[in-house]
Length: 205
Image (cartoon, rainbow, N blue to C red; front, top):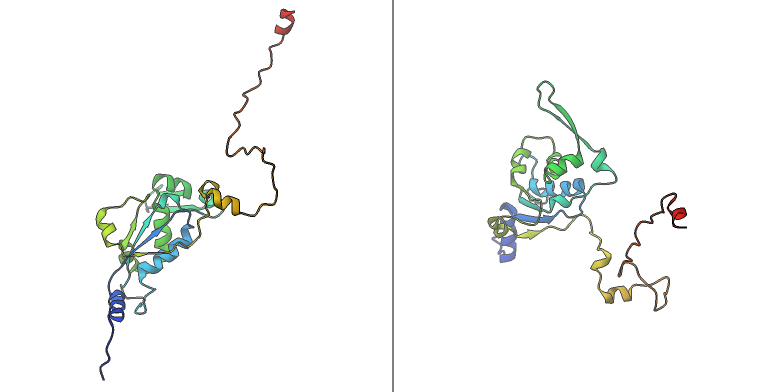
């Protein structure tokens, strides 16, 4: 007996087979945690029809790649090894030097590594679109249909809070009304103290 399916069920079925375009912001996000999530959508592992040998992944657009983060001192201690199989072709480059040369290269290598050691990841990585800032071509903006949640919560700066939020925040110390807050009105440095040269004070006398 044939069963009727609603429009919502048919739309979900179409989305499973179609290639969607996802957008995610890499601002203050860990490179490897973000790379694992992006690789999951590039391979289509979030779909119920996923198979290791099936090419059912989606497009993923990553913006603000220049503002990605790493744990601790990984920018300095994380070393990437390159070898082009030629004499004197080996190079060990730290992560911060690669990030300064190409802001999208570090996150690209992290995502490519999370896709696994297989041949089909070459097709998956072709659907990855990386941008160092929030600017992107217009044709990509028209294709985006889903916004992915960030893997980490970005804390707000003290200047991002409004005056009402600051007043409602619980205080441990109550300052007097004439208390001076340096971060609101910074104190001008008095300058460098110049010690009189030896012998000048005696000459004045």
